Length: 323
Ligand SMILES: [Zn+2]
Image 1: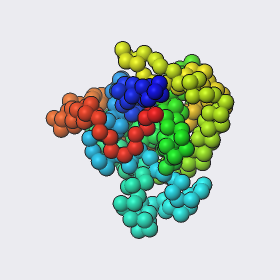
Image 2 (image 1 turned 90 degrees about the vertical axis):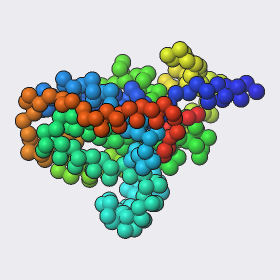
Image 3 (image 1 turned 30 degrees about the vertical axis):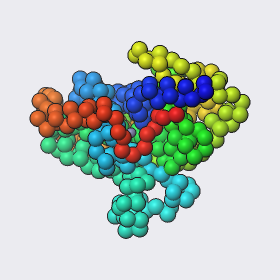
Image 4 (image 1 turned 60 degrees about the vertical axis):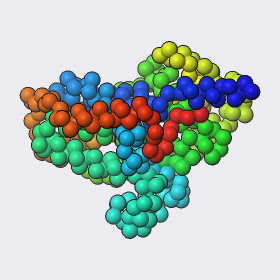
């Protein structure tokens, strides 16, 4: 009975799903700015608030647009074991082998990152400040998602192994507890990517490989911690939410031995490198004096629609946070 009541409470009060968590995506976009060369920092830094505030727009779009769901993940375990060679790396070859419907069903994140990179390059070529910022904020989101192990697994929220909630545990709860106090964010400067699609493929392959460990370690801890020790209820913004307890989180954090920190650092480096590569490929346009243009009426309208759809709350694709 108590368990039923707790579940009902959670259903009523658990917050909306954010991949990498609201906090993680914001920090990744913010910290990526400081890995850029000076010409780009001069443009990106004054627009930091925008890049942070819009780091989660793609997750909001998952409540508004059906095809959006597939852009955030890729179920690599559907394609064998590491390095998942049965799945062709180019979109055209993958479509020829599996068909577009099947690919969309099991996720398309590396290809979507590639599309976004081309769009961002075109925005730099046009020196369209509003578009550069919009696409930079959003590509940062997709790149970061590709670094999350459970974004590369069909068991994305532990739903197949009695581990529901593990998705948000790994990507939201742990970084929220320790990123600001114990993660090392001294990271190498952005690098030019000769093969952006190949680069993001490597990262998602690593995620696929790590997914087993993410699931296995939490399963092992379940044996040591009875359910009432695993969860706690916390007040947040005037609401009560079900949460993994600090003690259980610490045990998982310790067992993972820095994995979340490594993936977050790799995300930040990758985001900065994609931004930098798009700018170089556009011919290194001079961004001096380029101010954020007024948003077009269409941009404003899209943002309003996203907010509305997100608040209504029906998600397309996978829900990451539910227990
Ligand atoms: Zn996402």
